[in-house]
Amino acid sequence: MLLLGIILLPVRALLVGLILLLAWPFAVISTACCPEKLTHPISDWRRKITRPALTFLARAMFFSMGFTVTVKGKVASPLEAPIFVVAPHSTFFDGIACVVAGLPSLVSRNENAQTPLVGRLLRALQPVLVSRVDPDSRKNTINEIKKRATSGGEWPQILVFPEGTCTNRSCLITFKPGAFIPGVPVQPVLLRYPNKLDTVTWTWQGYTFLQLCVLTFCQLFTKVEIEFMPVQAPSEEEKKDPVLFASRIRNLMAEALEIPVTDHTYEDCRLMISAGQLTLPMEAGLVEFSKISRKLKLDWDGIRKHLDEYASIASSSKGGRIGIEEFAEYLKLPVSDVLRQLFALFDRNNDGSIDFREYVIGLAVLCNPANTEEIIQVAFKLFDVDEDGYITEEEFCTILQASLGVPDLNVSGLFREIAQRDSVSYEEFKSFALKHPEYAKIFTTYLDLQTCHVFSLPEEVQTAPSVASNKVSPEVQEEGTSDKKVD
Image (tube, rainbow, N blue to C red):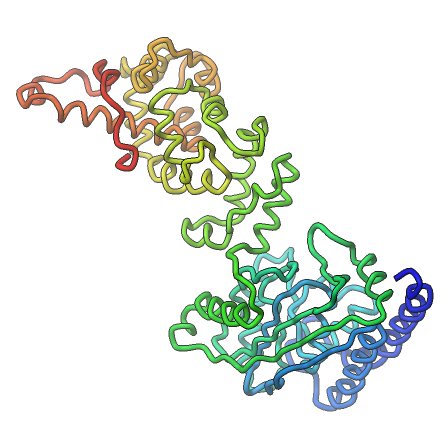
């Protein structure tokens, strides 16, 4: 690399710069007097002048970089497949697939179109531009892809990297449904880099853009294989469900590449970065976001908020996982049978600790459904022993001692966190309960224990006059633990 780089690096860098300058006038002709966001396709005469020249110069640029390209299969026409889906996406050099496919349109960030020189070249491809600041950008992008894909060849074909981020090609992550929503035939395109030395992979933890360019330019040649697979048309069911269509195409491409698939997505990468910033191990953020969000109806902001909560609990533990001690400390409660039962419900794989994925599932499945307005009202009435509309520290302590079976329990710290004064109003109690749904499951478990106790008594005792509805039965402390799975 050192010996070849002395000659190849400056020569190739010079050639790439020269080709970009030669391509710029053709890009200007193609986009002159056109708005940044196109509402109509570029006119035919512009295409006929600029498309052959830009295609030739793009091929020359990749050749000057040292890429040797092997193409398999046949490129589909716009009428056969309006959309190309390319995977695995691992580097900015993947743009070579766009060149081989005949310069179709790309889905790109709006900021890229503002870049000097390169932005003009990008606009010549009639891209679908995505804005990060526009809240309607996702909807507008999907509508634009639909419009172009169903134009009957009026617009150029669209090339999409459905993974949405770069990976190291060891597997295929979840495909985003954008390319599959129009319900039109797509042509899968496979990318392979069969080189002994990998100088192209551009991922979160690896070489920078400049480093990869230098390393690649120093190679005598870099091999690329591009395979155009047979066109895939969606079934009627897949037209209604783009996620199903995307899953089938991904499995088909993974089988051809002989690599596995995983349900991780770009959002998992974002969570990994966030976990690292919160001093957690980066792998703590891997939760299979796509599957979790779909099944539990959670969005990115909700899961990111849970990560902050999780970090506040797990930051003091080794390995970034929550043990029973950290769980008890977070809830400001002692380790008791009821708390162990709640911890076991979170600990899905029974390894004695709770990871972030188990924490998110536990809150969504166990705690949030139990944290209803009705449950909060019942809990407040139970704590408000004298029924004056406020909970004192003594009342609070009495109920928690009974529910947790710990007669010498000190709850001053927890009470001060809820109360703004010497007592707790219903609004303060409700606000705290909504922010900490974990307590709802403890309370409902306690109610279940009370119910089991009542129904286990003789019939004449059950029908006897009862104490006030908000009094606590002391016998609860003597009850055995309830069945975990039933709770």
